[in-house]
Length: 221
Image 1: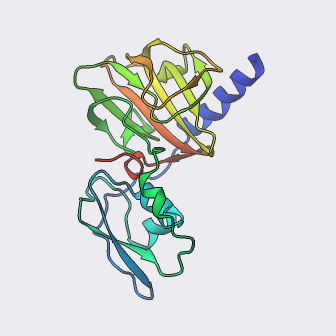
Image 2 (image 1 turned 90 degrees about the vertical axis):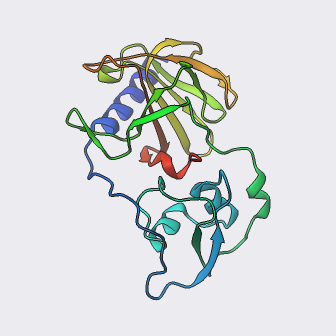
Image 3 (image 1 turned 180 degrees about the vertical axis):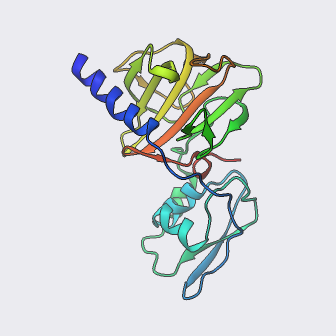
């Protein structure tokens, strides 16, 4: 258990601290030359990740053909181009309850790809409105919990069993332990502070494998 804990710490730390280019803001979806397909109209609360599951198409492919680099300005009713060669359309995926939810209700003070204290943000920083409870964004198993993870302070990682995991940092109090199975929406910790910045906010990441994902593709606006 000791070795496994520090293996996770090494891998996550290396990925969090490694640099990448700042993500530009989204452009309006448009059909590139040569692209063929049909349009899906965004429903209220729907995410690009959910659309990718409905039509069984890779999320990266949806982003590419629609020229989207961020989802923060995609609105209900907007048309999203889906490739014509899509197979195995799964209408039932529209109603599955495995979407990600916001871990706290609050204001995003630093977005994905934005530089902060010479570190490029691999997730989002959320300043809570009032309630400091941190919720599990999806159900899964707690695989990592460190009391002092460098500038990120108390950090928790939940493995969701399908290649995705979520990271919750800058907690003040932990209410779970490694090995626990938690349900989506369960309270796992309290928002705190860490590092040079003493303000209270949660650092939250969604990872596919070890690759950070832009949470705006997975969280409803």
